[in-house]
Image (cartoon, rainbow, N blue to C red):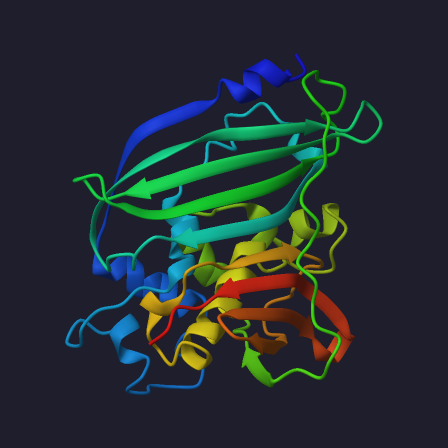
Length: 283
């Protein structure tokens, strides 16, 4: 049975208890390359328990518990369009969060064009203090004409036309997708060469959220000078996949408290994350 608009809007999973340890935070940080340039004092808080522990903000994407697998969406036509993140406070390096997750909006483009489905997850401390809000924007290309309103997404964040204020090169590990899947993302597309070939790729690709997290870590290390609590938002649109082992180039533009960014693979002249926007709090 095809999924319906009402079935999607009824998909709500409130009050999920998410427990994790500092080892989970360290694994996430390592999987998004926080120590790709070796052991440095500035990165130890993200990977070493004998420093005041910090968490890469994009770890919210592995804590968010969005109920995508149970949505009924046809996965053969599913694309991850964009990811948005708001940080209400720094994510604790370990502890328990309460997560409310579900579908927040469905934009039906018609039977031929599919639908845009937005999943929202809100993480909070057990005492109710908000921690993060994530929005996962999925393009369900085989699930159009399902009813409900039409509409459009907000216009993408414009990237400045001037030369970047800062450019950072970030290596990825040849086994990056195997490491990242230990964050509870076991899609075989990112591990099994045969599955990747059937999907039209010459080899397993990196998780889009791994690329997203790698760029987030790069901004924390550079723009935030290692202080992850300064990052207030981190939004980007997915443009193209990355293969493990490729070097990324992150171009960054500063406009007061707003940072714009774009990520590409220079060896292929291919943009992989676009229309990036991050709000940075004052130190």
